[in-house]
Image 1 (cartoon, rainbow over the protein chains, first blue to last red):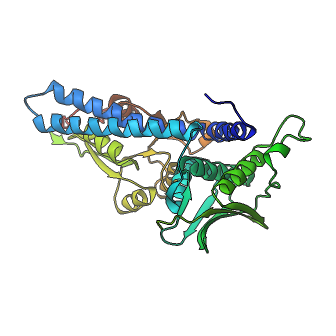
Image 2 (image 1 turned 45 degrees about the horizontal axis):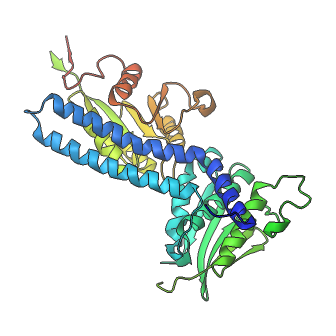
Image 3 (image 1 turned 60 degrees about the horizontal axis):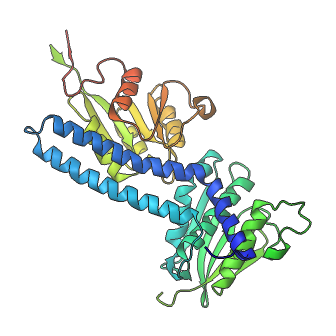
Amino acid sequence: MNALSLGDALDAAAYALVGERCRHAHIHDIRGELQTLQSSLELLARSARNPGENIALAEKATALARRALANHEKSLVDFVNQTTPHEEAAVAVDVRDMVNRALVILRNDAANKSITFKVESAVDLRILAQPRRSRLLILGLLAMTIDELSAGSVVNVLLSREDSQIVIEIQSDVICPAIRAPEDLWKGAAGEVPPFDLLLAVTSRWAGANGGRVDQVPRALRIYYPRSLSD
Amino acid sequence: MMPQAPLRVLYIEDNALVREITCDLLADDAREIVAVATAEEALSAFEASRFDIVVTDVSLPAMSGFELVRRVRKLAPSTPVILASGYPLDLEEIRLGTHIRTITKPFNAPELEALIEDLCGPGSRLSGEVVEQP
């Protein structure tokens, strides 16, 4: 283990914040994968009770159980990687896929407040970014947006290209706090930092480290990430 | 002795593997399972045909299981419903009416069958036997 810088602590706080916020959604996903294991084992047990009568069922149950196990392993690895800070190399990340995955995780939260997300995207937008970190940012920002909005609101997520940058624009009625530098976050905060402030500071830090930036405009937050050269 | 028509179950689950295995576990001579991946597909199926019970995952793409139940109840208010979810659901909080049960993943087939029997009556859990009435 290495000594921690302020940036490391901020990164860890962002993981903790988004992980806690999305805990129910993660549990739901893991239990969903466990359902495939549970059911395939039941199918195996059923075929074992009548081995001579239904070889095809036994073979199918075995194949399904193997697929369920492989899916569950992938799900657990994804979960651990998504919820713990770790070094990542920047690679080409499909932005539309990333946004859609985040919205799948948050669909219950959005449905509970009847919040509608509308995603408009140009074709094949790839950013150069650390995949887990960028996914964490989008997940966190969309979750915070849901929390801040009143029931029945609409959120537009526009994904576009602007020169050498890809723009992820989140349009809503949310009033975002000003983006502050990490070292300013706890100044005058009586020992506490609002979650949105923390997440915006981390968004700015992580986007900036990759050559991107974050802009705040009326009714929208724009996150710029450099376009992947393999685009 | 006339064989009773099989119980028609509309099952909605977006995870293809869960959907396939659950169909294998539930389908028998006493139950006909129509399985779809989305709430939109479920509504189309429900409008086109009669179902005795709806078993749906809560977390679905686009339209949630809750919204699906609200729309199904507009078409057929007394349709029994079972909501499946990865976390426990509070029926009082959900406020979707009567004839509704919840089940938490991962569940086993007998648990689900017991809920179907609870909502649809004895004879809906027959493990491959054909129901016959006098």
